Each structure stands twice: as C-alpha cells, then as structure tokens.
Image (cartoon, rainbow, N blue to C red; front, side, top):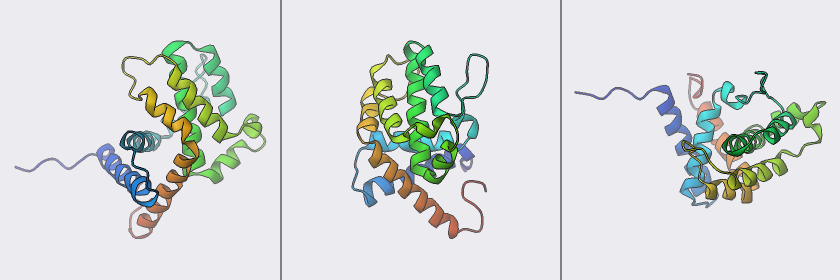
Length: 179
C-alpha cells in the first residue's frame, strides 16, 4: 500500500520550508526555527493573491495599500486589530523581501508613496506582539517581536529565498510555483 502523493499545499510548504531554512541557516547563519517557520508559512499563504490582499474594509472593499490598512487597523479592537497589524507586517515584509522592485512600483503615485515599508513592517509587528491574540492565532508574541527587531535581516533572507527559487526554476522545465 502506498501513500497518496502530497497535495499542492504540502508541496509548497515543503518547498518554502527547505528554501527558507537554507537561506536563513546556511547562507546567513540565522538559527531561529520559530522565526524561519513563520517566514516560510507566510510565503505559503501569500502564494495566493487573495491572501496577500485579504484585508477588507467594513464595506467589503479590498485594502491594497498600507495607508488604507493602517487606517482600518485603527478602527479595530483587540484580536482583530492584532490581526490587521500582523498582516501589515507580513505584507510589507513580503513585498520588500521577495519583490522589492514591485514594492517600489506599487507605492509610486499612490497614498503609500510617503510610507516606508520597512519602518511600517517593524512598527506593525511590534504592535501586533503587544495586542491580545485570538484563540486560533498561530503567531506567538515573541516571534512577532523578533520579526520587528530583525525586519531588515528577514528582508535580506527573503531576497535569498527568491534567488534560490529562481535558480531552481531556471534548472527546471516547469515553473516551480505554477506547475
């Protein structure tokens, strides 16, 4: 009897876990398994654009700019506010680390043009770490605090992850993330 092959989500999880561990531990010498696991899981979640842009206003409008996300976070309380701040941290970390060229383009001529994504990422992870978590919250306060304290290091690490997956994608006939 053989086991069923892993599904797409599990393959992505393994792929990003391996790349993230390699980039952080081997390439950078960062040995912090909870932090690395968090970054890896964020990548898996953000493969879906509906998760990247998953925050909505009370009217159901998709929030695509950090300025709008910040305004909405101020209107929330408790665990909902923590989730907003955590998402802003994830959003800014993802774009500045994985696709910095897109982060720059996304801000041009918009509300976000005056927002420093690194500063906002650090600040929002810090704020999230200080707010009460919902029962199903998967991010411990100490991991969010370390993301705040080491934001630039994580940005660099995500750049390493991107370089590794692009290198592996160049060696394959099928795009790794789309195949």
